[in-house]
Length: 267
Image 1 (tube, rainbow, N blue to C red):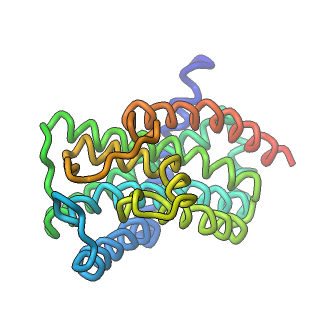
Image 2: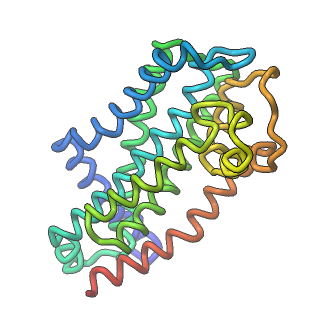
């Protein structure tokens, strides 16, 4: 096994270990799936009756935003699990094994990607039940889910970096909640961001959650010509800008998380 294949092989071993752990702790997957389902029901049946989206059903407008929200919530499992392993001394056991340092992070992010896939499948089925429909080709729909999974994988490295910097589950949960809720609510995920006050509208238009939501709506065909089109550059080019966000997150946070992991295990 050479230096190039070792992190991949070791990472896959860690991913299988983490997947088995999820099977033994279904509450991890349950929280990632049930929380967005509650939001679907609440917004679709409570707020959906009073929120009007020109030219389309509010439920079709809503579901791409719920998909992005589900990814944000599920990706936080990476950080939470890493802080638990660090607290329990699991990293010390890994350090004694002949494996690449990056394998632990690769395995964790890959296993969480599988959890995100399961979460998106459940969300898509739930969406179909409440009235969401795809109006584009199967190929574009697959690209839509593929983009969401790429976002999930890249964002997992962000949460891994934050977790390794904070090192405790309590601190990570506090920071994750404090950051994720503004990201979700000051965006176009739940309503037309053009109706927000000026300052909040500008923030929402440049919010990456809005960009990924807009890209998902375009790929699933959940758009309407009657909706006001934002002049903001990220929303005018939502799909390529989403891919740019993914590339930036991976380029910045993969080496940063790896460096923090090495520091954590050597402490």
